[in-house]
Image (cartoon, rainbow, N blue to C red; front, side, top):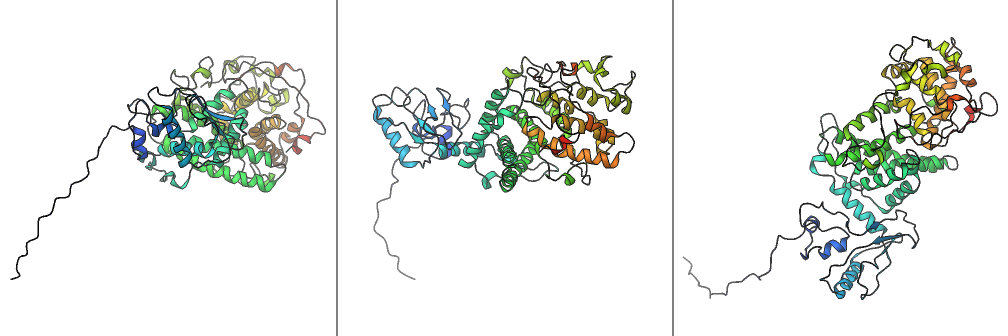
Length: 516
């Protein structure tokens, strides 16, 4: 048995005493950084550019509410366009502490050339000036952090019949996306809606997109579609590249949006849902699978989603009911409270006895429109009534809502006729496309031109009974016609004034087919 060897007693090692605290702000806990617990704002939150949230009333990683935060989304902006922080400095802090914070910010941040921040009002007058720092990469990182936070575990769970949505670790918001978002804000957003409401919608959409990934992807997609439309006339390769990028964002946006709608909607998501409905309509209308006439509807073989864009009216009405953007706490309330912005039933005038007076006589004969015809017993009547009131208008930013009314109140019976390629139903859509083909709205005229030409060719090949191809060629605007008068729709769809710009189609009878 081995001898037991005793060891000399050793002093017990003691752990160094250090302070522990759980009183840090929520942002620092979320970011897993040491909080200095200064109130009302810890220096870590000021350094990161977010509002401190010691209480439960403030959401995590929110921009400061005091003062202003103005972001120039253009990555190539000059130093004249700045991101301005205006806030009151806490009175208990000394100037040297502000200088140290600035030096720490400069030491630990990587900046790029782009938008700049002016913090002269943030720092005390006695401190050294710290005015110009590039902010593009920082703004992009802040937006990315905000978007990543929205992907909670519940958002990623698949719903019955849907695909599993993986976390967004494979996609991050970058400076390139910030530049695209800048083009949306300065250009694309102003082509949605009418001139009176477009700026307000733009600001709300950009704000909501910062915290709702499905809306952010939708805005990026629509902007790249606009880029592709611009490039189509000069560089086909550039246009195709932009289109591919747009479709990638579109696919992500639609998957996220469908997954959201398949579950109970949280109240704070309702505004983002309506914002997405506004954008998705324009994107769906613009996208056509091919720029070759023989490869688009109705000349190509039928597919289930050929007329998906035509069903947008029913879809937007459903989203309107779900989101209710006229409620007092909605971000859209001030825009929509004085307007019946998206009416759920057709205008009253379509039921008046003289509503069909503006329909051309030849069309009445072909479509069997008589004094006994109603919307219920004649599936062609509703779109014909709406078209007859805009047949002498030109598509502009001011009149776009009037043209969209044709599909806003499309009936299931008419859609069934379109799916069956009924010649008279196809003619009605062709007439509508012809009216839009020389218009100004990029996301409307693209489909109108390519599918309008396809409809004219298809009618010439298939219709031997009514002479619809020749009738379509003969449909021209009549300057000064009473049909171009105000038709009482502005109170239904947020329309502004009715800008009458009558013009004839020039050239020969087929000249409209050559547009695009």
